[in-house]
Image 1 (cartoon, rainbow, N blue to C red):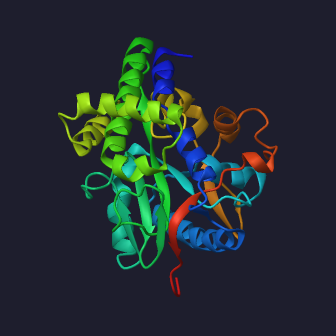
Image 2: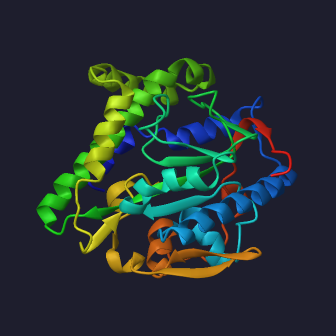
Image 3: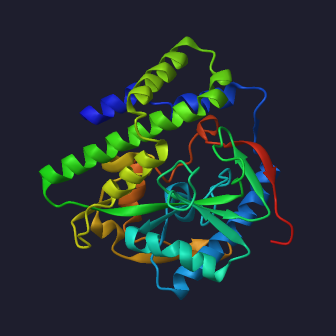
Length: 311
């Protein structure tokens, strides 16, 4: 485990929040019938994203569980209720304006440059006229059904510079996580009852108090600028720093993403990376083609879910 990974482990709350949500009787998980309807809506949203990218020659890849679903199930993982997309930084920056031009009345998007309340370093495309409010949602006015889009960043060739860049990105993302927790603490604190969980929360809040000379928005902007510093479009490696395994855990040879390949997905086709084996192994392990036991399957919880009419 690297030094930065050890530091992150001291402040890790994602697993803890999943446990809190799972053990709280007042929080409702998305039902099987809701999952089926949500997948139907997400599929149409993804078809529209695909249309925009094809029309304007932008590159995208299905990411995370969406890529795994395409490879293992030829569509959604049966219990999956979200979609993830990866775009090279250059196309990622172009995409919002093009989506808005093609579907001005259907979608809106969230990212830190246009929404001061948004608190993440990746983009969300949201469907107007729908609601999918997650636990601890930071902006109650922006809660439409969404697809996450993560930027694919260039990585420096020089090993020393790469480490400095990677550690800086990891540290900044940790800072953002701590300051975000401080902002959301009033909503989160009532759910914390376990002393060990409370200790982690307090640890993050102490760090956040030291770092609150900048607002969360300022830290997010610094983080985004830092992640996209490398402009070498031919670098040997690329990474998805905002992914679940962060900068080093999401780093891949550029050849993994050298080509976007159409693959079956439900009743249509979407793009995945040509080196999907390397990508999926890095995320899910060598046995990624084997579905996990039912108790280990991830399910999302929401406080409100409303599907659109005639969408």
